[in-house]
Image (cartoon, rainbow, N blue to C red):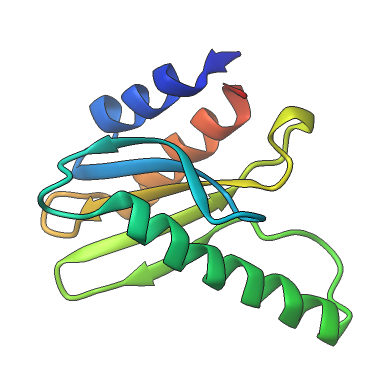
Length: 124
């Protein structure tokens, strides 16, 4: 299992087009760790805002009686992809990985694959 900082570093170095990554507690909206260009994107603000996205989806799933869990949430912008992946391990309950990709350089399928593997190995 990989430690939090090592996992974020792995995301930034192995995922083509990654410009920022954070591990976020969606109960508080706080980023536990961030890595990336803070001038290009305030990852702490993005973490808090995307907490609302995760909470809204969980509430909607509950209201609809949907079974299962969120695998990932994708937000596409003109120049970026924002990928949210809740953690599934016992030590990571209530957390999600948040990855920002440069859309011109990223391969979304590979990014999802790498982020899934990083999340599976994450140790909090």
